[in-house]
Image (cartoon, rainbow, N blue to C red; front, side, top):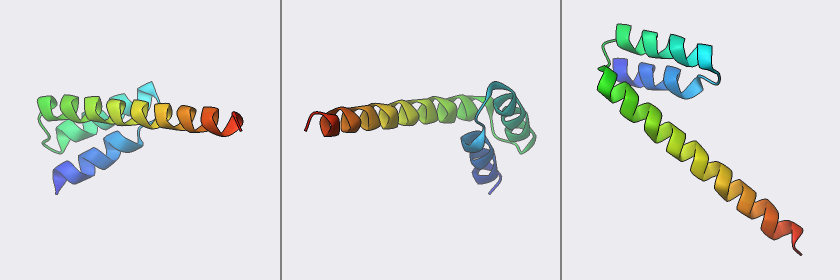
Length: 64
């Protein structure tokens, strides 16, 4: 349960200072640093993929 809370904090952190605070909170909740790093990497990949899909969608729709 603590990891779910930590993941929500990490997920909702939008800027540098929020991410620092979220990482500190996740550590206090008992989430290992390795798991935090893995989750942050996964989020970064997911967001980049989402941006690429959105960009591709807007390019395709403007071509018509």
